Amino acid sequence: DRVEPEPPVELADQGGDIARREKCDFVLGVGGGSAMDTAKAAAVLATNEGKARDYQGLDKVPKPGLPKGMIPTTAGTGSEVTFTAVFVNRDQKKKAGINSAFLYPELSILDPELTLNLPPAVTAFTGMDALAHAIESYTSTAANSVSEIFSLRAIRLIGRNLREAVFNGRNVEARAHMLLGSLLAGVGLANAGVTAVHSLAYPMGGEFRVPHGVANGMLLGPVMEYNVFSCPEKFAKMAEEMGEPTQGLGTKEAALIAVKAVQRLSREIEMPQRLSDLGIPEGALPRMAEEALKVARPLANNPRPVSREDAIRIYQGVF
Image (tube, rainbow, N blue to C red):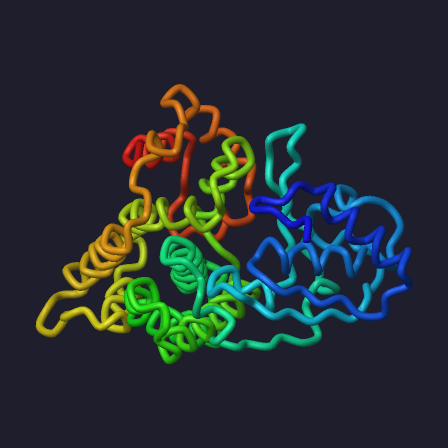
């Protein structure tokens, strides 16, 4: 019950300590992404020596952890099917993930009734997080013909159900579609990775403790606008899956429809639109851009190269 949004890396260590002390044989994560990430980390720390900080990076966990099951109560991170657990190193004001095949949960249970009381604002920003995973994994340079099936289906489910889930949260069907969309987006993410949205979002969470879904939701539209003509065919297909009218339009026209649709969705579900509204000073933007470039793996997947100046311009566009 100690989990908090944007959890500090020390929280994972506390979870691992409890699992070892109580001689646990199974770890169950119930909640949003922060709760599930903490559970996944606790499971591997129960059987591996050292601290969570030692394992931040790719494939640094030496051996399997305890078996673990996940029950998401938000339709957002897809953590119930990914190999990542992300924590904030508050002394460095940075976010970093433990990325290991040993973090894949052995069990995931999706129950839409557990999400019916999720407040509209949390539904909105977790849903935009899931949509970011779907769109980023679909447009990633690491995407393939199999991963794209999961990403596209997630775009369709989330794009057509997020409004209803936000404004009519007791709609079980919409909630079920959102949970499935989040899971499928997580599968897409686990196979194709994410792109510049996540790299740019990390400094917002690490330094200013902006919730991950808020950061991703705020940056998704601007990054799509930046990327749109690098793979217009994919953007046109996304517009079609979201139910936007694209009949008779050329590829580039239809591609722009996808960008506008996501930007409109963000406004309609009342996501924050400006960095200044979150207390981020304009003077921090160059520093944030430099930190974003250090989150190199997602940037390597981005369909269009991103320079420091490009990152600053994207931030300035939403300041």
